[in-house]
Image 1: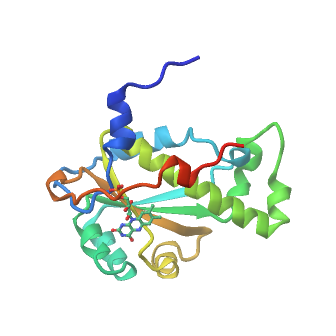
Image 2: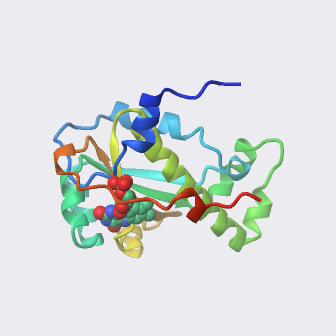
Length: 196
Ligand SMILES: Cc1cc2nc3c(=O)[nH]c(=O)nc-3n(C[C@H](O)[C@H](O)[C@H](O)COP(=O)(O)O)c2cc1C
């Protein structure tokens, strides 16, 4: 049995972590982006399918390409964040199934059932997006996931002619704590959970 992680680490990952809307100008290096992936890749996915694909939008030109796709105050957020990640999924993720789960080749299962493959891609890329956010927090970064954007336009502008499709976007960097607003409450255990 493993001991719990330290209270400081719990704060950093959960209780003191916030969704940041304002950013310091500390840049995010390629090494850091690679380190985030090297942690998130270990998160579980069904039959180890790993359908998520990440596009790290970091250059000014590519950020401007993303601007027309996002809504309202999200525009300023993606302009000022050092990086915005487009968390996508590969519709043909099962091309890697044999390699990723040698104990059982699930390729045909997904290839012959588009409803199953779509649900698997969306569910597991969402989970992997969450692993990505917590990997970033573990490495001292901050994030803000966002759904206020036009998925179809992102797909057209960034993924045309590929099998990648956008799920959600997420700003990434070092948050400006001075601009945080009071935190929203959360539902209690009794409101959200049942033990049967
Ligand atoms: C799927 C998802 C979509 C979100 N979309 C947006 C968004 O479009 N714009 C935005 O500013 N924040 C967005 N948020 C951030 C939430 O409002 C924020 O995580 C929530 O209020 C909790 O804030 P806290 O982490 O600071 O406690 C989104 C969060 C999630 C998980």
